[in-house]
Length: 238
Image 1 (tube, rainbow, N blue to C red):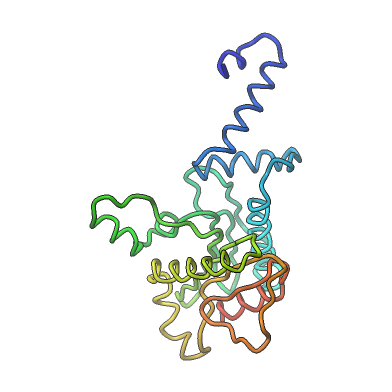
Image 2 (image 1 turned 90 degrees about the vertical axis):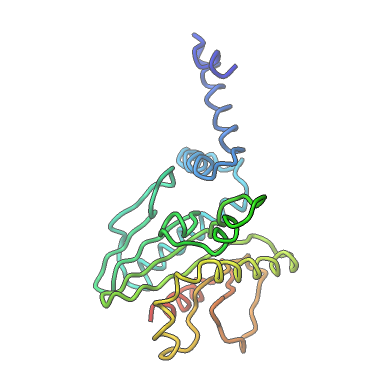
């Protein structure tokens, strides 16, 4: 039907075919295709069909890039990459403080070539399938002294306590699964600065941390807490 509509002499059918193709792509299980379609819809201002979760993820990506450019002083990105198949980073900064790459919706195994502990277990057994999980945003700083700092940012648009509890455990899974990302970061930094933030869980505004809680390797922040994200990234990059 789509092929016939695309080839029809009347433009209404061709337009309907294009809209149907977009609708099918939004329901696709292929992440790259889904995000490329969402970006196309954003470009023409058609936001209504997009789920709030998708918009919150895109907001968090833009927030992270903006914080890196402004408060952390890396300036404007020198490269932008589209959310498309076989992409690498979606933004790159290059300054005297080092080079920062920002990845979106990509597993570190693909983006950085890191072997995950999950894949080792999966490949050693029959009956286990699936790929490594994908953090929403991954920030990677390469300092001039060759030190590498990595921070994962996961986004969960929910105020349900049990769901957020499960999300915290998911973050612990990331920290264990991709532990090799923080080997070089943790050796000297922990001695100099204490526990270094390695992962951030962004949640809606209803979340409120207690003031006396000291941040550890996992930090929970409200999506509207820009200053909190600034402090967390600054502490990780120190």
